[in-house]
Amino acid sequence: MGDSAKLTCFEDRLGMRVGMFWNSEGPRGRRLFAHSTSPSDVDTLSVDEPLHVRALWRFLSEHLDHDVRLLGGNSPEWESVSSEVYYGLRFIGRNEFADDPPLADYANGSWQPAQVWSDRPRTRPVSGRACLACFGDRLSLPLDFSAPPDMNRAVFRFLAEHVYHDVHLLGTPPAGHFVTVGAREPSLSEYADGSWPSR
Ligand SMILES: [Zn+2]
Ligand SMILES: [Zn+2]
Image (cartoon, rainbow, N blue to C red):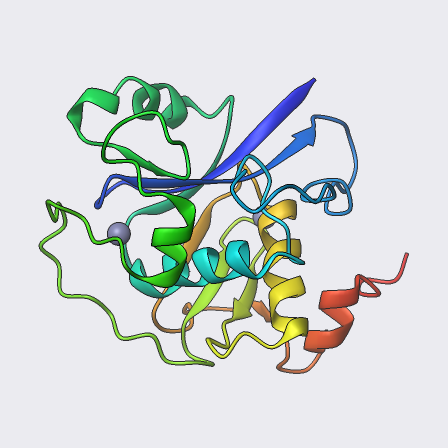
């Protein structure tokens, strides 16, 4: 069965479809995001498409420490998100409602929300401190906002493999024991190219 993944900030009521995947067993990192699409089609973001990558990094840098979740189509929260379109949930690149940010405008920074929902001060993105973390798998991926190619592949792998999980977008590293990409094992390149963990 096909399923889709969405990165959604519940505080800012802003969502982004990040990929489609087939709902099968086993690791799906290779399948999700596998299909290159036209730049304006964000049903599936592609790591090879600079516009997609820029849009994703804008999202990551602007919603640190917000109530961000990585939802699948069957997530209970997704139901409530879907029914909230009339209460201001905007979807990047959806092109369905007037205030959906066009992907290109979002990626290049020209789109700004007409109404700011979250009144929380923004956490400044600091490379190496901000991270994506899965609390279920105890895995943390420190983010490098200069977005070198290995970093982009690592972010896409992380998003692909932790849909439905307890994922957080943090401004500072999580407390407690986490496997941290790039700290000891795995290195960023091992994580990015999929050679970790060895099977
Ligand atoms: Zn937010
Ligand atoms: Zn996970």
